[in-house]
Length: 284
Image (cartoon, rainbow, N blue to C red; front, side, top):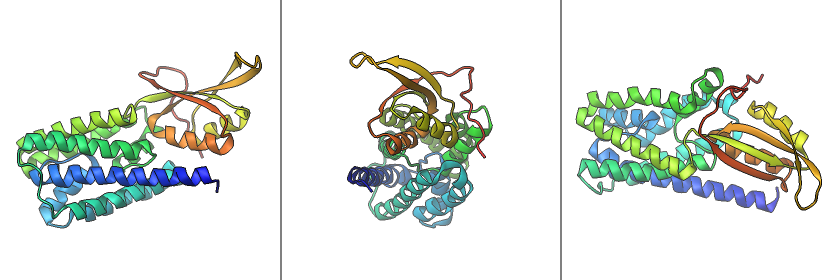
């Protein structure tokens, strides 16, 4: 394995650990002591832990396993391993921070600062190709089979999860949970530049056919060939253009590096996609 690739992998693991640590702090030192929950599997785990007195870390790990198993063939080995590692770190982190008293008993402050810190942690993990929530994996699977985006599917799940907090902790805590979730959502958006934003990618490489083939068959995304002329060299080259989701950016970078480390790549946010063949093709 090339030295640079090893360094990149170590950096990725360190940032995932940092993200899981921040998420643990946001949960155990702000949200959980004030009965404020997050969305997704973490939110379900907080309520289950409150009702059963079973440690939160146990529920976070166990409840995520079925989602990882179901999504194994759909999300790819790399994403699966990073997600499993992130979830394991979070489970350990919340267990280690649990004995420490919460930083504040003011529920509003806990929702605000807990949401900020949690969002920073989740954003870091997503930015480095992992996830902390099994519902996001299910959302990715449904994204391939329906016209709904990953963000819309996740929001649908979380409406029910955050609503359930009203029955467990009271409706004021459910509303604070919504505040914390909204803040975390926005912070994630800042950390990774778009929670569910589509990305346009331009790729200039000496191996355009190989890269295009991999994008078509591994990501299931369409690729358009454009003709470009180098301003300095004057040579004509093929330029690849594709539109992918934010969750596919990390995987695409790995694909391109494996094929052509010298490739020139630009990634830009796309606010809206209409028509064409952006919908992911089924891959068998």
